[in-house]
Image (tube, rainbow, N blue to C red):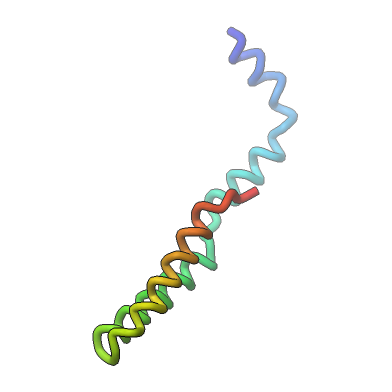
Length: 72
């Protein structure tokens, strides 16, 4: 019963909810770019020199930090 009352009272806050939903469905371009670059560094690490793996590790760490960051 209380849930239904809260839902009817919160109907005016739909703008915030819609914005939140739009951001949740929007792909994070930074994460995609970091991932593709990390895969490139991994390929270079296998085919050219093993030291390129360091670049992939750095990009994975940056990617993880970006994913764990709270998106407002």
